[in-house]
Length: 309
Image 1 (cartoon, rainbow, N blue to C red):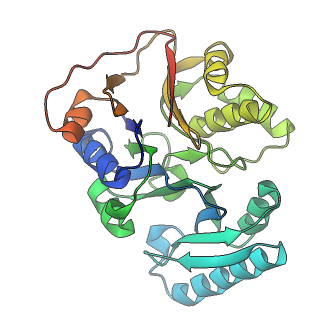
Image 2 (tube, one colour):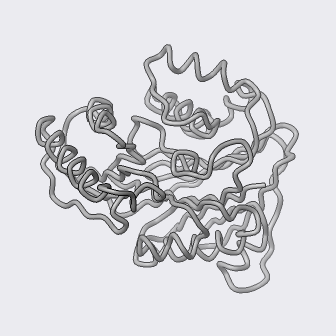
């Protein structure tokens, strides 16, 4: 029942935070429980870390403010110990944080070290990727995190209706491909060989933050990208490796692509123009963005397509 959306601009940066909010809010009926964004901003020499130290419902508990501050200080201390120089650290909510650091080491030791701080979950790491997700609809989350100010080239989003797991940040989408930089996925459907791929990827040394099959897709693709496989090729290979019914959208630092399984049961609508490509679960989301009737098409079974910034 959830809704997914993605946009990539061919000709430079735009206000993708506000754009995705329009799309996701139009699909609120598909998932009012939580909303998430994976946004790609300007690249520089900094590593951007998005992390949370508590669930939203816990943040107002007794002595929680002191605990959050203590754990935030522990995050800063660990960043310094591992050789990451903190340039900025801020929070719009008290439990969700954005840090920029100068760091030249491997990302996995950094992420693992931070995740050992009580309550800490790293939502994303990378030069351009920022994952923001919280409870409520798109307008609520946009207002909390001031996403209308976010300028970038591409991004994806997700509205979730909780069916098989809790209404919390750990179950909200999108998912980052822990610990690979700048790879994220949104997904509609279910992988029936989820446990096979989780065990296989865990044996390869990967760590998972949830029990969601979307995270499996993200890590599967990122591992292939790291080995030198092109994104489009990796997505085509996933059609034979994954069982089930699925439509997913993957983003990297400079690409956006979609994949539909051989049954094509999970909807996706595509719109292309000279300056942008837009995909969404429903056409209403595309109309909400462009403000008019446009020609769209439904991708066919086993279709994979990738665009680059």
